[in-house]
Length: 288
View 1: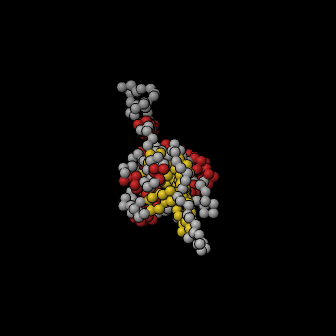
View 2: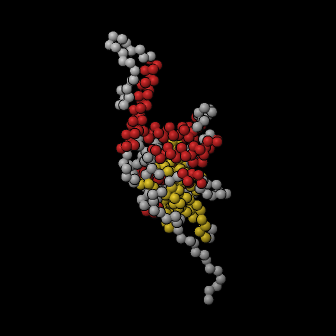
View 3: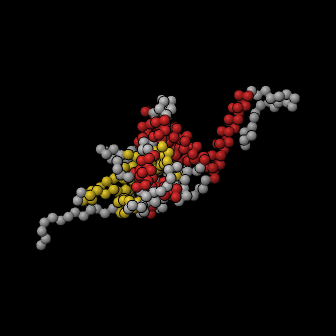
């Protein structure tokens, strides 16, 4: 019998067999199993270290500006326009943290597994693909209205089961836009608060990739309000037709950080963030 659970009712005498119907016995066993699982989750939460700690991004120059990285348990938006290397940066963070011993998971809702593996290879990342969760493939396999009615709930259930098997340190969801599109129409925005609260309950650091509208490049106001942190990517002209990719921390709770931009690039082996310097204009005309 599970601890703290006992059958309340008249005890059967030694001569008299139990009168509890078999179906009721099955329900009691199921309830005991549920209580046991809840007790295990409570024990895990109680045993979790109280010290905060941080999850590094492994981007040279950025972690130092974030006092060592993203605080554990934070829900962070990684926002930027198309082509701003959001997926590459998030993949890089997961793989590097897994190599350092953390358990990481990358949930892709639109982009296929094969495409992500190719991105990893181009970044020089040799990690396997067992940490990739391809919701896009799952969507193709389950096409009935009953199966796709609430993908946000399906994802919550999956992450809870996965976290119960192995405590996750970092979870990436790519992308928030696609996830909201899969939620029931009128309920999508209302579900956002519930989903963010659920992610925090895992105790893992979560990064949600957000695709910005090129016509109005701004972070979703509701998501940024609910999130613990916002990392923002944007393009900037560097003179003579060149374009730089800029990165800044617009928000990070429990962290003293600059809101200035860094110039982000990948040198073939790693991501590097250098302090931004305004391009110097050329002087025209003759000297003298």
